[in-house]
Image (cartoon, rainbow, N blue to C red; front, top):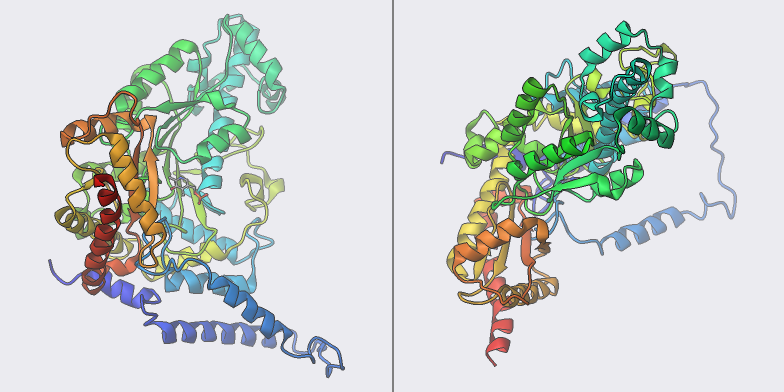
Length: 592
Ligand SMILES: *Cc1c(COP(=O)(O)O)cnc(C)c1O
């Protein structure tokens, strides 16, 4: 390989594993403060100063209480886990980038509130530009795409549910009205996926006013009454919509079912296949079941960068199937991709960094552009400070949300603020500014963040290769991105024994000051993957009373400093040494 561009980017845009960029960061923060103070002093020069010589006992005179308490705070914070270090490979957290820190800092000083243009004349423009930069990376047309920054992936996922529910509710409400006035039977499944074209056609043909539509809406009217009317009009018990989401989904999806009042039963879990991805055959089965049961599909969720394993679901094949159903059966099912973690991997496409991805993973990431909505977390692989997530749609129609108004209605009385279309009210512009500055410097292209993403994937590959070679007990799960998961087992032993050893090793790392790793349990959703690992290794053959779940150690290689060969050469042997030490304890104990 030729000189790795990611190393130069890391050198330019991160504080440095040994704080090599300290002077640079100090200088830029100083310059930012200078700029801010100059701006302040230049405004309202004729206004009075509130300053008077401090009297005895005044906090200003008693001097450095602020300084001392600040020091107390700084001291306390040093007890936080040093997640900037490449030795921290436990969770989705790493050092922050310089553009992330500085963009955040600059916006924080001015403190715009992006809930509306009035409250944020510049912040809201920065937000629009930052969303366009993310949109371009995700494959949306940046001129058409809509979106906003959220506090994180959880709220971005909620934003998707809100919009999908709004759309489904409109389509179903209109169909209910038509069925009630014409006496024709209602098919709730077909109605709830009819599409805006059909909706407009029907609304015009039947001259349905917004008031009438509202009286047929479960969201805007009384849900109990509306469901009863749907049951009557369809001749069968209506049990509400369902949400299809794979077994590796983030727990924010269960929260969303709770918050939106769908009921826990409404989340239908799609099985995972032998490689830990959404199983398309099961997705088809469950869709057919929803159809047969007359339960509309609120949304089909897929995951790009699963929280536990970094797996990227086969979006391309999933969307091909949904396209086919749309063409053949007229079903428009909302497609959401939860790319909170993996969205930035898309920056690797169409450049030399794409080679770090398996072709199936690249094809899946490419298909992300065909989603109705996307969640992405700049505070994960975007290296900007918390709390910064983002929600995007390909166009204004998908972005529209309201308890009731039709999406094509302008609501001039709302101004051009976002407050009416975001779940959150007051919103900081800091995350948008941090993302904006990252787009302007590091860049979201294949030669920018894409090459850094490739370096993180290569770090995971290098780690896996080194550990495999040195530690025969280490058995890795299939991996798509920069997260490695492995268990520790020996030939011809049961899953329970392997789990016990993996737990011991994890406990050792918990007590170690040298590396931080995490652990996770593959449960029933991963039965196919576990079975394939058991069979494939010819080793595990648990007794029936043995464990069904598999414990794995999880290492997240998102830290930018792993791109440096010096860091890899230093840390890989140390990690292997630590792992060997961890293994000695439990194995000897078992032999005794
Ligand atoms: C992290 C994550 C979330 C939740 O995001 P927060 O920013 O923690 O709210 C949702 N989905 C996936 C796949 C994630 O990795």
